[in-house]
Image 1 (cartoon, rainbow, N blue to C red):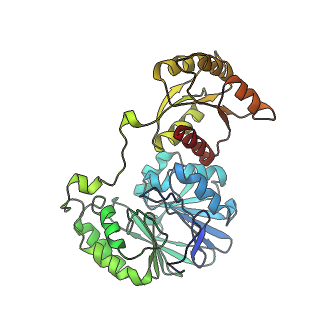
Image 2: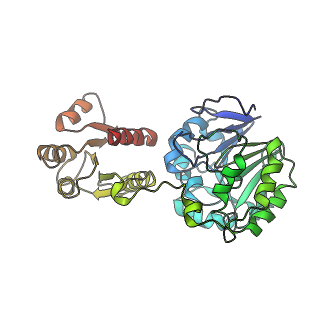
Image 3: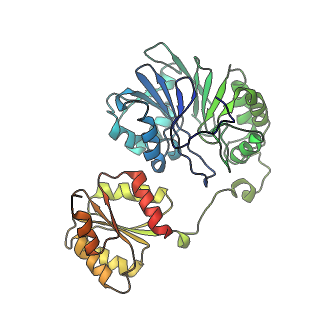
Length: 384
């Protein structure tokens, strides 16, 4: 691939033979999600699929290349939510009886708390390798305390590509798919406050230097082409990081954009189904919103007046007082009439939108939720 080429980040990008970048891209973000899809004949392997907020875009790109049934393995290099929180959503699209989660046994204990139902393929119980039907071998290398005790990376022998997870990641203003001159400094900002110590990182880099590599594919940051690999390895090998870092806390973590709690937007979720409530809570919380919750229409009216949320997500089928009646009461009260309300419904049919608008709703979202569409509507209404 030409690292100077201008790529369409709205679509999957084939970065080398049969391996695709299927990540999400937001030019305002410093911390990018880079899942990768390896297609080998009728089998496919998905690496570090990302968080809940990335799922809609990642899934769209993945399923533009392969059918869900082709994804036989999902590799989770460690347990962090930015790598694997979307795995349960993948299970809804893929028959989890056919799909296996590839991870280290120690990581699998924590990954299980995401509610994953698929069978695990534990690399430490399988000689740290996985052989695909074609005979292609994926090898797994441990990277202790970089940053998790049982973190792993994946080496594809055929293409000589390293799926490096957090290693070689970067904080990337003005992000590009392929790393450019000055990438080492962007790696420094990420690694210095994230890896355990110089000793741990140096030992891992010594092992990386023994691999025959054409390309490094990190989960964050940019893809590192062959000519830049030796310099990047040498840079990280001697980087003071973790307990050896010389920076102040502000220097270590000043790049993180943190809004004060009172600056964050508050969203009232009105939903009597516990599972749906949890899904919305998780999606919105991870996306930086503060949630307030009500499980019936009467309580929704009371909380709207008490809390003055920035947005209300209102289920239509509710106990005590249904969603449309609750909406009418909220919109009739001068204290709450300007709060935007989205109707949540599994029964959106012809004429329903007009009925919701007449009741006072500003828009509606259909179940099952398209997460990308939901977050897009939330973002647009709150930006206004």
